[in-house]
Length: 168
Image (cartoon, rainbow, N blue to C red; front, side):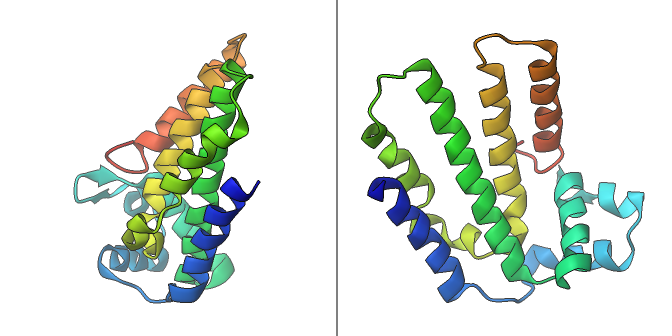
């Protein structure tokens, strides 16, 4: 359990210790979405990205947490942890004999401090949403018995990932 717990605790400690509730760079565009919530603003291009679903989350968080950027940082961390879990469980389902310690590098690398710039920048929540949508779609598509329900869920997650950032 330590192989999973240590990187997880360290990642959230980083957010707690160094996270700042401050708007920075691209996040200023979120102010327009919050001040003028319309379908046009939610759907508007950001550079070459349609970040519709992150805009929805920003709008929701703005009205529930008064646009506290630290909440976005923690939400990004939660999405990353869920994505890691889905990827590991999808593989474990295919290879049940693989020992759990073999998955430690996945958690260690994905929760590494190397991505500190993304970890502490609330706007990057879009990237974590893409990662979660990808992991969720792979998890659903890798079901032993693929049904229309799982396929529809995977396609929905594909749409969420596609309209969260360009790499989605």
